[in-house]
Amino acid sequence: MWLRLRQIALVAEKLAPVEAALLDVLSVKVAFRDPGVGHFGLENALFPIGNTLLEVVAPTRENTAGGRYLERRGGDGGYMVITQCDDHLPRRKRVADLGIRIVNQFENKHFRNIQLHPKDTGGSFFEIDEALGENAHAHDGPWEPSGPEWQMYKDTSRVAGIVAAEVQADDPRQVAARWSEISQIPLASDGLTLPLDNAKVRFVPCTDGRPEGLGGIDIQCTDKAAILAAAKKRGLKLDGDTLMLCGMRVKLIG
Image (cartoon, rainbow, N blue to C red; front, side):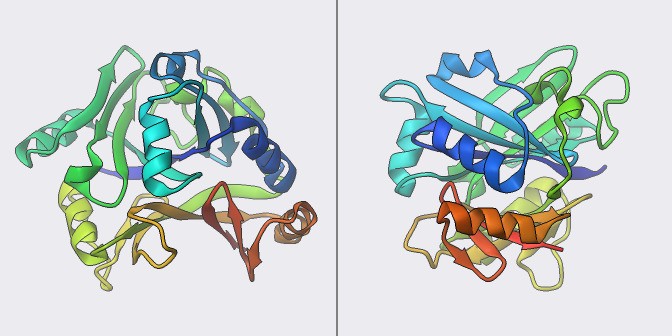
């Protein structure tokens, strides 16, 4: 069984300024806006980054789960690490056997989804999904959350994929071990890195004054210089090849 990183979700107080920054700095395009998230008091936008996807959600009313998460983490930042598997049923059984609570789940003819409770996983929301149907397991195959034609909106002029997620935790080794237990994937020799099929999840201490959560991502670049120039022009905080965007450390690779 394989598990690959397919989508990263961020949460922002306001969608429009984050969207504008992503379009300008990373030169990505909006592939889809899911009307279904309105049920949760949210609006969103999905951006292809190679064959991975970046989602930004923002609350549209008071007293939403997204809004409460913003309050807990002190503003814009990472929200969910969303993975794709090739066989959902054993994954669901594993979650049940470990007694992990499920925050949200659904299934239809195109998609199976389970979103795990962060208090039971540690670190961040961890989601395990499976696409169904023709070409479902291909790297550029269908992915229901991103709309029916997300592939048409890929722009790799500056970015080629999300290749790592960085989860910060009070006890990163313990959280790494828990995610390894859930995913049934052995950790790397450092005990702090979970290798996925196409990326990795790093577990690090909380050193930025913020609580546990998804603190950063690594993006494979095709034009790092253009990204850094655009980030500097917009006045984004830069530290070498890492920029701050939507409260996230975005490390530029390549």
